[in-house]
Image (cartoon, rainbow, N blue to C red):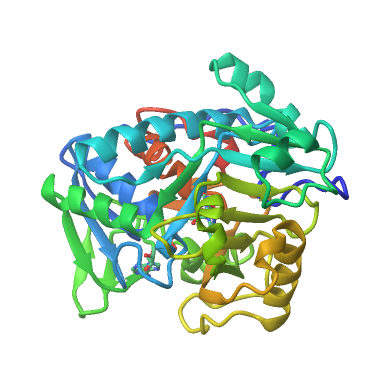
Length: 399
Ligand SMILES: Cc1cc2nc3c(=O)[nH]c(=O)nc-3n(C[C@H](O)[C@H](O)[C@H](O)COP(=O)(O)OP(=O)(O)OC[C@H]3O[C@@H](n4cnc5c(N)ncnc54)[C@H](O)[C@@H]3O)c2cc1C
């Protein structure tokens, strides 16, 4: 990495000193309402349903809609998480579940292209610290010297890199289609889905008994799970206003020269460890163009009202980077672009915890730019925690 900075997509490890905590064991007849049909809420609702509960899933705009974080075409799935074993293990389970479910649903959602890391130093911490976990699971990286990489990937400028490291196990996921597939499974397995904006009622006697829906009705439930992505900070501003912040993040799709289509379309997902912008890219998805994303946090963003227009300066900087790293893309036209909200927690860790005043009101969020891949595994874990079958995951408790 150029500057030695921790990538923003690597959540911080914490030492949790509080005693373990577990919610009450839920009665199997309990009715659970999950608000938010993004990747977190959708999978959690599905796992709760499969655990035998009556589940209602509610979303204001629909699963994987254009304003949601889960609403872009694709998301990266990678094992490399530095020294953070919780996310490594969660990713291993998620990979297994994405694969199982795409078979079950006859719908290809995971593309095993591998993930190629552009490294400015010999052994960046992101990779070196992940290595013990890889070995534990019998997984391996492949290392390419600058010269080997230049032969293998002649369209990449490797001059300023030390080496390139390929994680052959990762790749990318179809994001909005994934949310829609989960939603279809949820409904076909017996869940109830409602399209409505939710407003929580007041908490009485340490319980949230109901919420108001935008059609004027009231929804009652024994337990509520708010998996509201970037909206969480606004919905519970008194508790989460200072916890979840929302930033504007941009992704661009560049048109590659016709002479280079195969080279670009068939390369792995890539991440540039430049220590500042952390550009990454997803090639070849459905001929939509060569996707490049900027992980550096953008300006503050309102997920409901802000327009999805790219910032000229952010776009220009990305173009300059691309012209340097992929010289054939120097004058590549912008064929599509996407603006999505990051729902950042203070330390990049997910949040799965209860409202401090109501044990039946759960928050699930804080995806912080890396949550999508974990959807099925996080949903499975969340369902068990909410049902009172396992302790809260310390890393995900509010601090
Ligand atoms: C540009 C970008 C690139 C990313 N890249 C990656 C990546 O490569 N790999 C990766 O793993 N992750 C990535 N992420 C992160 C990942 O996409 C998110 O962490 C994840 O999608 C969050 O899902 P969610 O369900 O929490 O939120 P969302 O998908 O935003 O879903 C929240 C849902 O709640 C609903 N909602 C909110 N409030 C209400 C209300 N009051 N009533 C009813 N419904 C409500 C919304 O309509 C929405 O559908 C990226 C994110 C962005 C923005």
